[in-house]
Length: 299
Image (cartoon, one colour):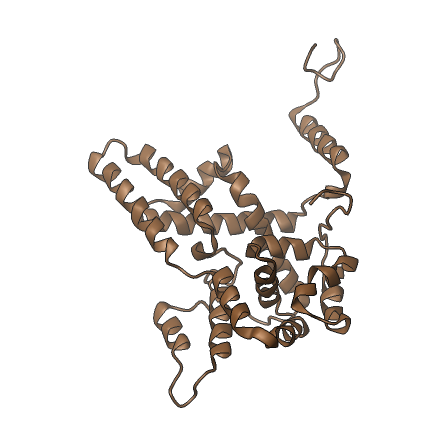
């Protein structure tokens, strides 16, 4: 049987029309899935690009990040399947924060000395253990932006398997570039090992959120309610992720795609009353082009 969907004697469509027909077929196969807007696509690609650039810099500062990204973008990212979910989750979370109108300026990017100072307050102004944990969560969140305030994924936020896969993809690309230089090719192996060891010891937003969750105890409902009232979505996501023992990005997508009616049961572990959930429900309802989960799909 011929693979063509067109009858003999009929000229095949142009490449542009073929692309449109493939898009239509995909939509008809899953009409509830929705489509990416230009903003969603641009934000997700930006998050992916910044992550690739950061990982490449850790492997070898001499890598040309523009050349690497452009080649991958033309040929398809080798790690696309792994990055799609986490980059889309980060992009959608950023859109959510932006439309909430709570952040008037991008969180500052802290240098390591500034972070150390923030984590070690002056003796005259001691912080409680809860305050310290909350501050660590805020610092982890600030690291998820680049110097211009664009959304990014901190390397520490990646699970070890995803980081290693991306790192090895970058290393393979770099090896093709320096294969004629035996010394530099040999250095790549050591650089991969050092980068993996460094990333394993870093604290991302998921770990910081879990530490905050663990120390809250009976104060958990109040902290979660306060996060909702302030539209502090990263804190809410982190607390919910810890309560459900799920990854931060997975919990973010779960919240962002939830039907309003499911939010009380979804966040039941945070022991929130319905009044506390009202700002969350309203904010999600106002998010443009939100991909609401198909209630008939399997979990």
